[in-house]
Image 1 (tube, chains in turn green, yellow):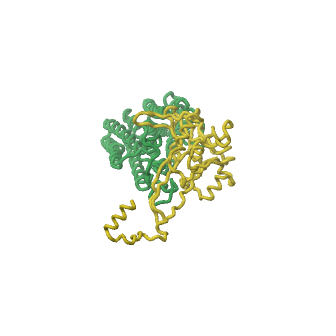
Image 2: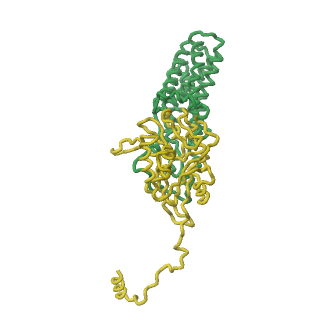
Length: 313
Length: 248
C-alpha cells in the first residue's frame, strides 16, 4: 500500500498523544506521582498538540476537507467514522481534566474525568487500528496483531514522552523509568511478533481464485494500460525485501534499542542524567515509530495486485 | 446510510463470457466515452498528452496466459473487469460519510459525489479494484451500471443497456436481473456454470463470469498419421526437387 505521509504522521502522532493522555490521566487520577500544574500544562499541552495536529493532517489529505464533518455520521458501520466520533468525544473529558488539573476545578471530578480520558483515548487508538484490521483485502492488516501493535506502540510512545516531561520538572522516579523500560520491551516484543507473522503468512486468495481461471500458472500477458493507473499507485506499492530489512533494522535500533539503553542508563545514574536520557530516548523512539509505521503501509499488499501479475498478496 | 440493505428487489448486473471475449477493449473505451458525459462525469484524465498519462476508467481488460494442464494446452484469456455490485459490498460499509450506498430497488452500488470526502478507504476495501479516485475532483467514482442508460426513456428500448454491453462486438457481455432465476442471464449462468470472482472473500458479487469452454485437443484423438507418407515416386532427390518446384 502507498505509504502516504499524512496518514503515517497522523497515526504515529495521535497514537503518541493518546498514549500520553492515558498515562497522564492515570498518574493524576490515582495520584501516583506529585504532579504539579507545570506537568499538567506541558503534558496535556503536548498530547493535545500531537493529537490535534495528527487529526488535522489526516483531514488535509482528504479530497474534500471541508466535508470532513460528514465522516462522523456512519458510526454504525464504519470504523473510520467511529474513530472520528471518539476522537471528538475525547476532547470533552480531556477539557474537564485540564480544568481540574490546571484551573483547580472541583477535585471530585479528577478521577472520573481521568478514567474517561484513559478509556476514550485507548478506544480511539483501537478504532484507528480497526480501520486497517477490518480490511480483508490486506492480509498484513487483517490480523489480530494490528490492534495489539497500535495500542502497544501508542502507550509506549506516550509513556516515554510523559517521562521526558517528568524528567524536565524533576518529578521522575526510578519506578517510572522502570515502567518506561517495561513499555519499551512490550512494544518491541509486539513489533517482532507482527513482523514474524507477516513474514511467515500470506493472503489465502490466489491468482486462480481472483480470476476463476483453471491453470497451474496464471501469467499477466498484457495489462489494461501501458501506463500506471490509480489502483497501482495506491495499492501496488512495492518495497524491495533488502530495503525493508534495512528499515526494520533502523526501527530495532532507534525505535527500541536506543531508548531502552538511554532510559536504563538514566535509571542507573539518576539525577540530571535522567533528563538527557529521556530526551534522547523520546526523539530516537519517535523517529523509529515513524519508520515502523511507514513499513506498516509499505509492506502491506492488496489482493487487487493479483490481477496485475502478483502471484501472492 | 452505509449499512447494506437486507435484500434488494432486483440484482442488476453483468455476465461476462471469458470464452468469447476477444480483448478488443471496446467496452472500456465506450464506457469511458459514455461516462465522460454521464452520471459520474467527467472521468478526468491527468496529463493526457504528456509522458505519464493517467485517468479515471471504470472498466479494464487484462489478458492472461493460463498455463497448460494435463488436459489442455496453455491458452490466452481476455478478462474484462468492472464493478461487480456485490451483495455484501465492503466498499459501502467502510464509508464514513454515507456517500457510498447500495440501492434497494436494483442492487446497484453508487457514490453520492457531493457527500464524498475523498478518503479513498472504499478503494482499499474493494478486492476487485472497482473504485477510481478522481484526483482533480477529489472524490471517488465508480461504475454506475449506466443508470443513465438503463432507465433512460429517451432511448430506444434496445439501447437501454450499459454502454459496455451495447458496444461489445463479440457478444461477450450480457446484462440483466441476476436475482430472477428465470431471466436470460440467470439461465446463462446455470447453463455455462458461471462463477464468482474471489468467492472465498464472501462479498457475493452480482456480476458473474462464464469460464472458457474446454479446448478440443484434436491432435491426439485424430486418426490421421502423425507424419504424412512420402508421395510415391519422389524418393529420388532430383525428382523430389522437381516435384517441390512444380507444386509451389
